[in-house]
Image (cartoon, rainbow, N blue to C red; front, side):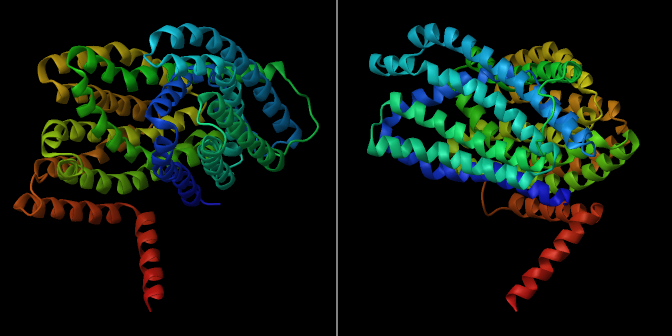
Length: 481
C-alpha cells in the first residue's frame, strides 16, 4: 500500500479527534461545569508528564518489528511480548510513582474547591491506572506501525477518542457529573481501546506461540529506547519552557499572546508528522543508501506541500487573528506567530532526516543534539525576551529549528538538500513582508500573487504533486459532467 494512502490515514487520524472535541467540549462544559472540566484538564496534563515511563520502548519495538518484517512470525511475536512485558513493568512503576507524587500535589498545590479536591484524591488509583494503559498502548501502536497497518491503527484511535469523550458524557448525564464517576469512565473507555488494538496486533503481526521474553532483545530495545527517552525529555523542555519563561519575565497576558498563535501554527506539523510516521517502517528495513534516496524524494514532496501552506499562513495570520479575536490581539501577537510559523515549517521538513536517523538505528545523534541545544535555547530565549519581548521569545524555537535542520540533514547525509530551502524561504519571507493588515488592499493583492507563485513552484518541483493534482482535476471534471 502506498505511502500516500498511509499519510492520508494518519492525517485523518489526527484531525478527526479535533472534530470530535469541537462537538463534545461545549456539551461537557454545560453538563459538568467549568470547574470540573478544568480539574479534568489539569489531571490529564499532570499524568502526561509521566509518559516518560514509556522509556522509548514503544519506538524501539516499532523499529525492531519493522526490521523483522520478513522474519518468521515467531520471531516477531517474541519481540512483541518482550516489549509488552517491559512496558507493562515500567507502566506499573510509573503508576506507583504517580500515585505517591500526586497526593501532595493535588492536596496542596492546585487551587480548587475542597469537594473537587476530595474527588480527585479518591480517584487517584484510577488516575494512576492510566500509566500502564498508556505504556501498553504505545507497544500495540508501534507494532501496527511496523506492520504498516495505519488504516486500522487510526480507525481504532478515532473510535477510542470518541469513546473516551462520549462514555463519560453519558455517565455525567444519566448517573452523576462527579469526578468519582467521570474518571473511572474515561479510564475504562481507554482500556476498551487497548482490547481493539490488541486484536489488530493478534491478526496483523500475527501473534503465534513463541517465547514470552528474550533478554538479548530486551537489551537491544533498551539500547535504542534509551536514546529516544533522552530525546523525549529534552524535546519536552524545548517545547514547553518558553511559555514558563515568558510568564516569569513578562506576564500571564503575554503567555496568551504567545500561546494562541503557537497553537495555531503548530497545526502545520500534522502533515509532516503523518507523512514521516508512514515512512519510518520503510526507513527501518531498507539499506542506508536506499533510505537516503527515499528520504530525498520524500523531502521534495513534503517541501512542495508545506511551503504554499506556510506562505498562505504567513499572509493570512494577521487578518485571521484580527477577525477571529480582536484587532488589539492581532497587533500584539501576529508578528510572534509569523516567527513561530517559520520555525514550524523548518522543523516539519527536518522530520524527514529525524525519522531517517531513527530508522537507521542512530537515535543517539538526535538525543545528543537536543541535549547540546538546551543551554543554547535557554540563553537565546532569555536574551530574546529581555531585548525584544514576545517576538524575541519566538526567535528561540525558530533558531533552534534551523540549527536542528542543519545538523540533522548533515548527519543523515542529506546536506545537499539544504540549498533547496533558499527559494521556498524567499517566498515565505515575501509573504511576511506583504502580509496585509486590511482585507482589501495592495498588500492583499501582492500576498495572493506570492501564494500563486508558491503553488506553481510546488507543482514544478514535485512530480507526485503534479500527478495528484491532475488526478484530482480529472475526477472533479468527471463528477461535474
